[in-house]
Length: 115
Length: 108
Image (cartoon, rainbow over all chains, first blue to last red):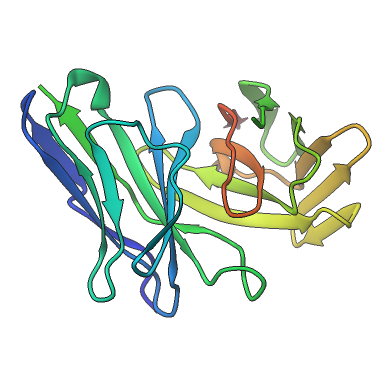
């Protein structure tokens, strides 16, 4: 059973470009979460999605960031017009969902570098 | 919002026990998780405890929860060099809150 998969593992963008980060949850998981980790810091929650629904986006910056989890395919975190401050590791996690299984399993992350 | 605090560093000798402590503010957390992060890697779920439990043991790992004081600890028995990593406690339900983590260094 493959774990949570994220791609790309490393992404380099110039200021003003768009970044698209993909996350495929564990098989059977329908809940996806995105977190951001700045250097030397813990992870900060960004958004929680179920298939075709955003459940909680309280951690998402108001502008330039968006997330989706379509009926088919991976979840996408999209950052438009990237700035240097967006450089971070972005982690995706998935779970079965409460009450069956609330444990979140993390992917290896995408390390975004903005030049 | 939730605040989570951990000591930044812990150094132990191989074979000793390690105790990593965590305090949090939100008493409504249903689950409290411990994750391990090795350099350049994602987070590995180590164990978790339900908020209505005081203790959970899982092989070399023992989790203690003091709900009254909002204090969580992770004890690693017989610590090995492979245990060197950053350890995060993460209270929460659907939305996990992480502290800055405790970097555990295991010395020979």
